Image (tube, rainbow, N blue to C red; front, side, top):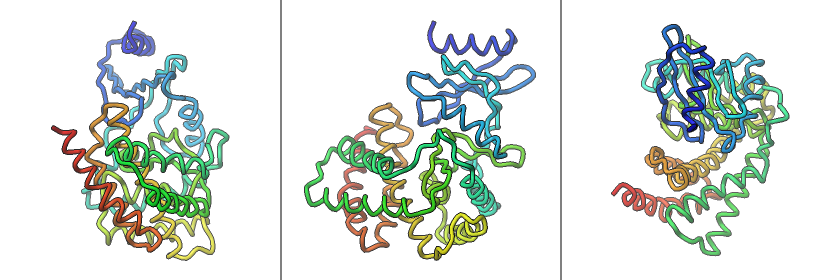
Length: 333
């Protein structure tokens, strides 16, 4: 039997032979596949997460952890953990990404900043890895390996390598000096859903203990959507006040907080740009190619604000971005 045949057998057993329709849901960047399954009486989600490719234990364990804290997540109704099949509640089809032109957008972001502050206070679970120096460095290496070496195929000379390592060291230092909290790692518009007037969170399985500003960067400097600068500034000030109110930080100035935010964002966007290249080169997924240049633009813009990061801004602007644009043009021919 093929994997899809095993999946259908699992679904048929769950519905006790009742007729159903199966519809693929596209767009996930991981090895997981999702389907919407509908019978005459109900509609659910089926997740196909091959245990030979994906460790499903964090998904199962953290589902219990975050649900216990009162967050709205897909409920696991049934599973075949040996094969990696899960039946989940259906939270609908409306993501934050679908509401970004809504007149209430800023209200939504304020609600999600508050939710971020609450999420950050989730007690650590043993399965949450520490987002430590080695972890952060591995993610920065995704950029240098998958984008610089593999996607645009350029070698970094000795001087560039030294300056790159200095920049990485500064980013790592800045992330580690922040309060370490429970971090979603992908708290952005495609992983936040609107369900029955509530916010629901998906793709939580990579949660770690890491820097306070990381999820806020994911939300406010989303790789898939750019907030107008004035609105971003208001929301960043709101975040500062909200995090203070939730006692997530003490004796931190607003300038220091925005510095944390900016440099954490640089690390995240470097990683993201590398991942978009990896998805194309390793997994054959072209759907993220259009997100590479806007993500590089974030890096160029933010790094330019700081004297100690001028190399990063200029290197990405003058060397990396032009070669990426040329490679993208080539890949579409």
